[in-house]
Length: 320
Length: 297
Image: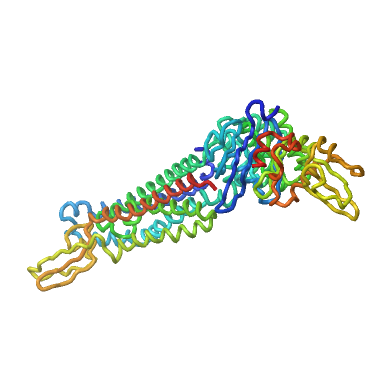
């Protein structure tokens, strides 16, 4: 499945959101193919929740647009709401409701509600229907929220920090269930998270935001392939290195450089005595997260082959 | 949505039902006793014959017996219930959703938030309306014999026998809903709504009290065979018409100058006060819907 064939599950075009004079998100362009599990990464305040809120129709865009399966998201319209299941941060539920009441709420507020799915899932998790929400653990509440989101039967599932408040076991179980749902039904999932190890296991697509700007967008494998870690003599200037330097750590005699360069650039740019290694997912994320927010990826020319792995739309978004 | 509204407000609905039952339990025996005494004392015949002029003693003893004690006790909750019920139901309707973050769940189901709010407000307003009408009906029925021989322009009559009770309840509700949306906090919304509700209520209180709008009527009674010993509280009123509320009687030359509120004034005051409350209720609820519809942040 690629973003060029058929309709993208999620497509943003110069999407921006301003609060007062502050841009929470700007110039965000990408296109995610259906069936992807997208990791949405960024420091606090980078615009992750804003992007998700725009997607699910909790917010209206200031400029540009975002479309879910080809239909532009419009804040608080029934058709936008029907296309996305959303699990908000801290999985809010009515604490005085019983589990059965929450399911009843889901059924009465969603035309495509799948009651059998919800009952089966809660049964399997051993969550009794007659218990009050406030008497359940955080992990169980998160599972009820996920159950409601899945039973809504929308083609896109958006999760905002779904495991932030959970213990490690609950995290594992929760993420395993998300993956199973995605694999079973071809659901497209977008997960905002700080937990890099979780994302590495789950995601095949990555969106990385810092300070409201999209820094990376593309399939994880392609992004990893388009970056290298070089060990070079310390005296080497950035300009001599192949590709674009993303991060550089200097030690006494050597420097470790993470550069956005594919194998072709690497072959032509590599000097004797330099060592090149493949980058790990974690190294890649950390390098971009630590990169000063003022240095946009836009310094790279549009035809930079280093970015060939990304969809065309992602490139134009970052470089314009 | 109807089920969700019911589930979120059913505890409040049960409390309302309990209040109606409690009121009925007190008012119905009292009303029945009042009716028995009323006919036993021969008041219907006296009123039909002489408009009350023939039996002032019987009327006075009837009013003294039923117009005080429990009757006065009932009037206190009738004043307090509308504002407290209104803010307790109204403030959490949006305030708690915003305060606890449950709006992110509630407004990302398939029902758009504007429809969500309109449905909730419609049903809850309807419930409060039914409650207001029920209380007003019970009180009016219970108090009816007293109303025939005294003026309805007094506490129980003016609070709970016309529009005031229901309109005041809806006004407090509307203010609390809007305050919840603006303050995003339940307790803050309750306090703000209470303070705001005092403004129209002070106006309504003044309308019944020292400021008479429309102004009090005046009647001049010539004293031919010496002026009658008319007092403010004489039964029937010196105006000769049961239901009039006499404010003052002065002697001027050969006549008595009586300042009074005619019985017909009851509905005028109810319409002015009730209209003020209802206008505020409609404006606040409309504003809340509009703000939620417009809000994009």
